[in-house]
Length: 273
Image (cartoon, rainbow, N blue to C red; front, side):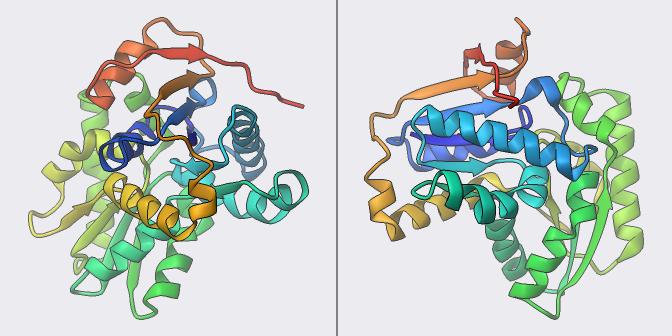
């Protein structure tokens, strides 16, 4: 199986395209909804929470885990790859969403001016700035950190509220004020595609909006093709399992709304040791 880890519902915007692109692959989705959002937490907290999720998915038989969370990708991925995997899981892999997204974003901008709308943790890490300049050194990158409250509203299903719309309005205006030549904007949190319509309403019509799901799915297919030994350890029965750390009877119905099809979540306790 392939493990998909996110702080909450946001990773469903990555999982759905993976299921569409690679329907034969069995997947386990783990949302740490009890501790969402990650975007306003410290590096130490994000690293510890992400590591607990990775270990849980490895122990459930996933040789490959994808961080479908920009905050975890920015704050925890490299440390886990460099220190935890060699010591504990040398034959396992963890991939993030930032590098493949940066490669795509850099190739799409005609003006050379791009914008990032993301969580405070992702913006503070400058992960996208570093990756984008590595791919395309001449790129002008502007970032705006949306408040953590925005992700909470999305997690609670209040994505159509006046408060959510006001946040999208404010963040869009701030971004374009920083660089009016931006022609491509990345929604750099996997929760944000769930409210893409809000950003579309407040960004100039000439600005392209990029989301990550299809990009990550295509890059995953390419990665597995280039790593047949790893791909051979992932079963092709098309099994689906959905796990959450939150005890909430309404969670499955809300997640189903975001995913676009019925889902049933099971609660799991992560090892905090």
